[in-house]
Length: 281
Length: 315
Image (cartoon, rainbow over all chains, first blue to last red; front, side, top):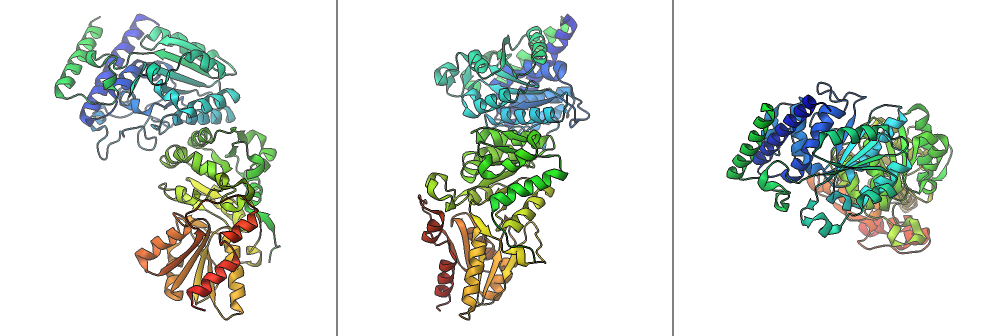
């Protein structure tokens, strides 16, 4: 990836983080930690990887994305807003009565949302259904789904994993946002996942590990995933929960809590400084 | 007059699905290792490319069906009622019901007539569970002709439906009705009468008709209404029956909690308070045994309906 594209993505991801914080602060609730950990991945998918058209969100041949870890939607909404699916101002109404942006993704309400999700484990199965329909109809679209690491504790994820490899869904790419934390603590202490790569391999996936904040690594991994034939792909992305806001990084308490006004201002100050630095480079 | 058909509604469903599949390429079927029993196996044989075996993983099956529906397919996702509505309740609720996707959830071997398998497989709560989901249409057809028409109707209807299938072969009741017309949400008057109304669904429609015929000779005039669509329910036919006969009995192979009986009570409480007696499973689990013996034991028979009618009328 050339430096200019990398800079464009980094700037966009910073704006996505700002939008995330604005949304969660105005909602006075929501999930900032797992949104910020996934912000770079959302940015890469919507600004570099996926074939989509914000002016035609229902384009039949578009690539699809299902946020199986639906609670990460503040950053997904901020990404969709940056991409032009709806105005940025909508982020201020997140979770409000009558809002376009629900507490978890709603496909019937929000442009750009391909599947309603939020109850953990279900989105990945729905993504399998979308991938299967693509195969049936000989469509070239790809289906991306993002899972939380804690979400992998849901049995349905592994039902879906068996289904995806049994049906050779090579148009499916599952991304694990492996930030290592869940509500009750460290994932390895709550219900350990190791060896996660071997688990997905045993279920018939092509597996890659990447740094989920490194756009070069994403470019390589997603290109490889596209080249895999006959089986689904899994990209395990090591991420930092709360990435980009100093006091939220790797702090389990920021899974599902909104910042107060002082914390909000500090977060914005930090992110705006980072943005200014990126733009000056 | 058409021919008398003695078939389980699951078999009628399987045949109807194959028929619908001929003209509608968007119909797909999913099953979770019970295709032989739910009769989606007929569809599998006819259109192997449109049948997806999901293995014993009902939760995944329901959400996969949601994904297929999001791409314009019309998935029929089948298992035993216990598993399609019970095991996978939350998937049906959140993956299918909440986005109002065009998935037809199919529950076979519903009620206690599963027989020997016993209580673990005798689902008596499926109607209650599915009724509670906003926007879900709930159907429980009574015979071959009604099931055939119901499958046709729900293919044409764009939205989530629950279709309940029975295991036992039942003799048709609608072969004698050349004017038979199926409409989603509309009850059917199977026998006219003025002394009392029996509102029945599924297997119990046949039993209620038999009871009405037997009581006729004793000078008791029983109206029998078939409610094939439990949600949305036909309020008008129920209120009219309450006004004209003054007393109702409901009959269903389901718990008296949350099923047809309570649906009828809700309508009448709001619109025309009338006494309702509920025949059904009286808040207990079933147990193993031959299906017909169980139906008799739990009062799901023409004899018990007739007895209840006479008690209610002090005859």
